[in-house]
Structure formats: C-alpha cells, structure tokens
Length: 173
Image 1: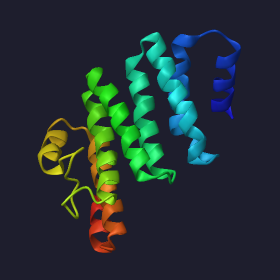
Image 2: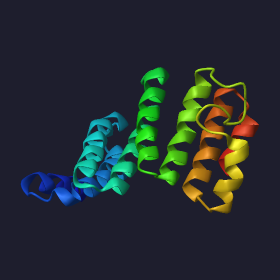
Image 3: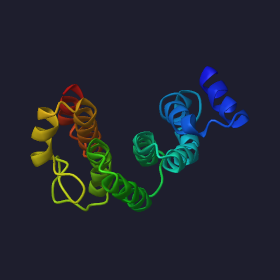
C-alpha cells in the first residue's frame, strides 16, 4: 500500500528527478507480490524512459534489466522476448553498464537456448552469454546477483530438460 502511495504521489507533484527511482523500486520489487507480473512491464518501460529523460542512466538501466527479466516470465513468445532484451542490452552497452549487460544477457541466453539457438544442452553458452568464460569473471568480481542468475537460469534449463538432479544442484549452488 505504501509503495502504491509513493507512486501515486509522484503523479501529483512535479518531481521528475525521482520518478524513475521510485517506480523502479515499486514495479521491480513490490507490485508483483500483489498483482500479476505482466502488470509491471509497461510501468517499468515508463520508468526506463523517465530515467533517460532526466539523465538517470543508472536507474533507467535497472528498470530495463528488471523489465527484461519479467518479460521472460510472463509467457510472451521467446522470439519477441529475446529481441526486446537485445534492444535494451544495446542501450546498456551504449551507456557502458557492464553489470547490467551481463545480468540481462544471462536471461536472454536462456531464452535463446529454449529456442534451440545453442549447441550447449546444460550450460548457458551462445550468442548472448558464455558461461564458461564469464563465470570466472563474475566470481572474481563478486557479482553475486549475476552469479545467482546463472545458477537460477541453469536450474530452470535443467528442470525443463527433465534433469531434476542437476536442476536441484544448480538451485543449491
């Protein structure tokens, strides 16, 4: 209720400098606990644009990353999902947002693998993300969220492939 109140207050006052940050937190971390995940997509895109408009590239990037993750889980066609994700990854590249690029590329690679666009079966290897080369870098930099995302996506992939033991192993990692 307080999160929605914060978002509602934004529309009553002209404080465009904090719109992106408030909306990113609410639509990225709160709203989906009460409403379907799909209801976060348009507001996250609005938050992204609000951040771009005021030069808050950090929170615009966070909004885009969450949008790309949520988009994967709402049941839209994977072709559309991976194209959208690539569009926002390119914006992140332009803005030199290394963490967000890697983080978003992981979930995109899972989508590509579900489309059969990777030779690898149980690893995230392909056009968007190379697990074998990137995991040591993520571990060295202690990029915990991206490391979690790799294991989470691998758990989903293994579960989908009905390798339940490997899915469980990845989930525990």
